Amino acid sequence: MNCRDLEKNSAAWLQGRRPELAESIAEHTGKCSRCALLLREEKALLESLAPLRAEPTAPDLWPDLYERIRTTTPHRAATRPWYAFALTGAVAAALAFVSLRPQEPVRELTLAPEDEVRIVRMAADVLPAPDPADDAGYEGMRATRSARQAILIGYAGDGE
Image: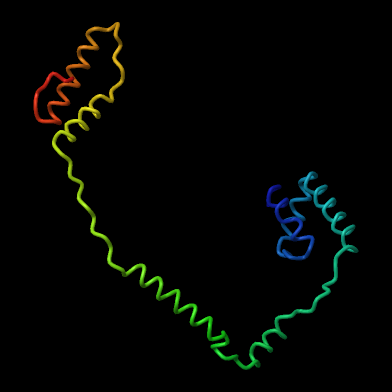
């Protein structure tokens, strides 16, 4: 046994829950004065708390409860009033009606060709603003925008 094991198991041994540790605890406390002091302090603490231990005030209720469960006759299965069943049926019917009613068909969106071109140009215009001081960068962005419009729309225009 080492110091850590003694710290972990000393309270259980002092309370009588681990009697098999008596020999190893006695051997270790004979060699380690720190653990011997710890064991004496824990023993003194448990002895001072002994008068404060509460006596069990309530009897074990499980045997009586088990006997009552075993001997009681079962109640009727349907103890709810009739309107509870009617309300449940009405809710079920409403849910069935809502979920099974015919749905409107999905309408297909059609756009005129000029609307498609306008939408593509608007999408192509959403670019970071070019730096006017950098002429090469500005011209490159104009060319990129025009090329993207030409690819998306299907024609080569001036990009404006």
